[in-house]
Length: 195
Image 1 (tube, rainbow, N blue to C red):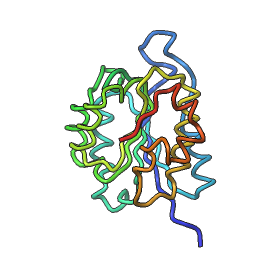
Image 2: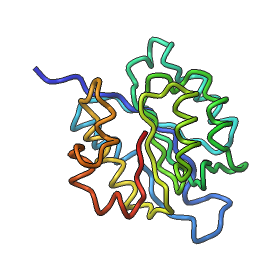
Image 3: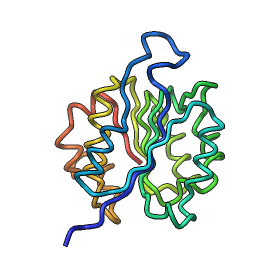
């Protein structure tokens, strides 16, 4: 009997036609990568494009795990530009404390992964975000990251998490985690961290 896989909600910002500097624009969408995971693991993937804080707020309110349709979507994947302890959308930066306020239960008992530069650069803020949102696991990057390399690491992470049901903390342990050992040099280059 095939194990039950985790389902994913992806909220992705605009990469190519954004208002950022030209050097920060590129054409990479995570949806095709997530479709590959969906086909392989037979999981459900919900993909939504977000531009502004209002878009993000709408989906955080809509995809709450208290709603029956979304209670089995255990992974929330946020792909956007970022900076230290922040994510960046078209209308500005949102720090992790503000995001915790906005979440209003959306991240509770879920895995939250930030695919963004430096969002988890401050461990104290990351741990506070995890505690305030009651997330099971919070992961992301502490350094400025190459978009393609971080997308590869994201898919490898989700592949490894796909059938873990209780011991998500294994991902935090660099010595015990198969994922961390297998992709060690890539994760060190990206500054991957998990709490």
